[in-house]
Every structure is written in C-alpha cells, then in structure tokens.
Length: 292
Image 1 (cartoon, helix red, strand yellow):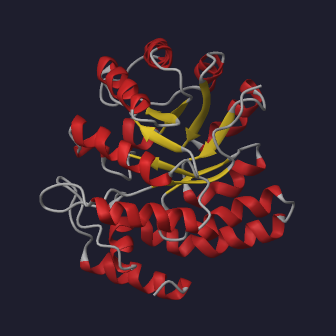
Image 2 (tube, rainbow, N blue to C red; image 1 turned 90 degrees about the vertical axis):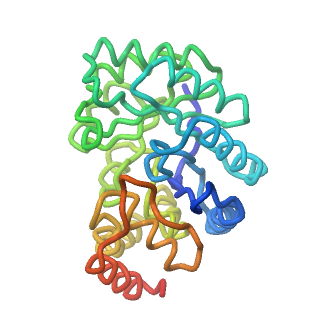
C-alpha cells in the first residue's frame, strides 16, 4: 500500500515574473494565500508555472524558494519533466536536493515514444531519486497517452505512487488495474467529481490559484459523504473554469491572479496576453463568482 502525497486539492501555482526574472516577494504571497486557503499541496514549476520557459538554474531556485516558504506546512511537488530523459533525471535529482517532497513528471512530448519507451523513461527517472513520483498524463499537450497497462506496470515501481490524469476515459481502467494503493488525481478542473467518483484522490488544479478554499472544500465534502454539496460546488465553478480556459493555460489564470491584486506579471513568450474579449469574460465570471 502506497501512501498518497496528498488527498484533496493541490494547486498548480503560477510563477510570477518581472521583465528581469522571478518576482519572489509575490511568489511568497501566493504561497501564503494558498496555505491560508486550505490548499493540500503545492505543485511548483508545472505547466501552469511555465516551467518550459525557465532555465534550469531558475527552475530549481523557484522550487527551493517554495520549499522554504511553505515551511513543511503542505507538501511541495516539483515539476521536473522533460522530453530528454537525461535532462529529466538531472532536474529530478536537483529538485530532490533542494527539498521537494515529490515530483510531477510529464509524458515526454514531441518525440512520440512507444509505450515501452514511456515505461523506460519513467522507470529510470524514478530509480534516480528516493522521493515519490507522480506521472503526468496530458495527451492534449503531448500528443501521447500513457496507456492504462503502462501505468499499471509503472505502479509496481516503489516510488511511482500516482498519476495526474487528463484522459477521463481511462480513469476507471487505471483505478481497476492499479488498485487503491495507487493515487489518481484529476488533471482537469471541470471533471473533478467524475474522477473522485471512480476512486480518485483529488485534483491538481488551475482554478485553485484563485479559489483555493472552494477547490479544497469540494474534494473534502466528497470524502466526508456530502456528495450533493460537492456536486453543487463543482457545478458552481463551471462558468469560471470556462473563462479560465478561454485561451491556453496559463494565460487566463495568470490574468485572473493579477485581477485579484497579485502582481504576477505576464506570461513568457511564446505565450501572449489574454485578449480583450476573453479578459472581459474572465472579469465578468470572477465578479459573478464573488471574487471581484
């Protein structure tokens, strides 16, 4: 039986930037906002954190900063994936060295590895560290799926303990094949309840950047047996989620964090500013939700 790194809501936190680098004072405020809001874990340098545009020294410095800022109050899970296996190993070791509690390792993108290649990629990464590894299956970004049978094989490796699953259609198969000891987290905010209903342990969330308490409470209500309350909370988030994904993540959520008063800055190129129309939609939905 593998112990989950967290049960509930983990925020895939944005990285606030200035023209010259990372805005660490704002990042510290975001960490505190999350912890005070009841977030169960913080995922740093993931997709939402724009890790793909961060050089390695900055990437690791941000992980180290968040580890120190959380002061062990919640687990810190570090994005450390790459489509170059050797690079992923280097990032994983470095994240472990600066105190990350676990790793989020994305499916290698662009290369279009076989299932055998995916197994080998994740196995050597897991073997290179002692901390837990969460697989990140996001076919919409990588054009590649980790099949349930491959996840089952990887789940037999001691420190591969979970998957962030963005392929809703295979959640049930993964749960059936891997058993209760392997954690499945929703990778999409709009289907948290369906994933929980099939045995999921929570969500790694974008919307938690702006509604950490509601995201935490939605999962907590489900596990406390208040299914109707959890469903009601999920349904209330849907229009806000649509606005948060009106353009590719993290463009809208970074704008939303800025609207809340945090100076998170702009996304790095090649991502651009949120269009005027979608910014108006986002502002409208945040007002309707009671955030503005």
